[in-house]
Image 1: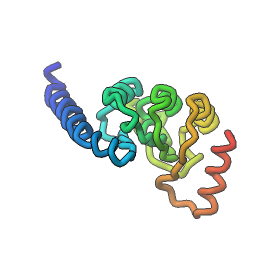
Image 2: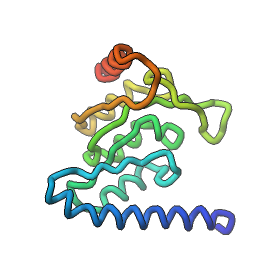
Image 3: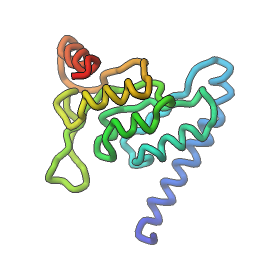
Image 4: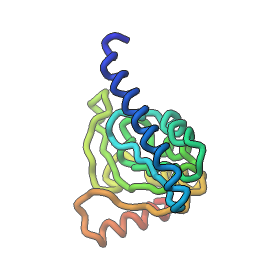
Length: 160
């Protein structure tokens, strides 16, 4: 693993410091009854659904959950796989889309307006239902009017 030594060291450091920071916040979250919702941003830290689930679940408290950004994870695994892996650990969801470039073997692409990308929204909606998610769906990004964002989100909620 010598070629990846610096990456592994940085990865482990990020996990360790994240864990310590969250552990320090848990007593305050319990006291104030506020959930700490961890968002896995596009930083190559947790790129597999089961690994992110394990990190969130490792705190063993209902006060630490996941804030899942649907569009951030398309290049790593299908969003429905993340949703099914996180299950009851989902606190909130960002609705965002990402268009994969089929010519790029690394899974690169670009962020696009919701329903214009590679997210299979009916499958994502079914996965949210399957895990019993009933929380907010917050649109993040895009350049649509509020009315068009709302129309598209209504279609997603309807399972279309």
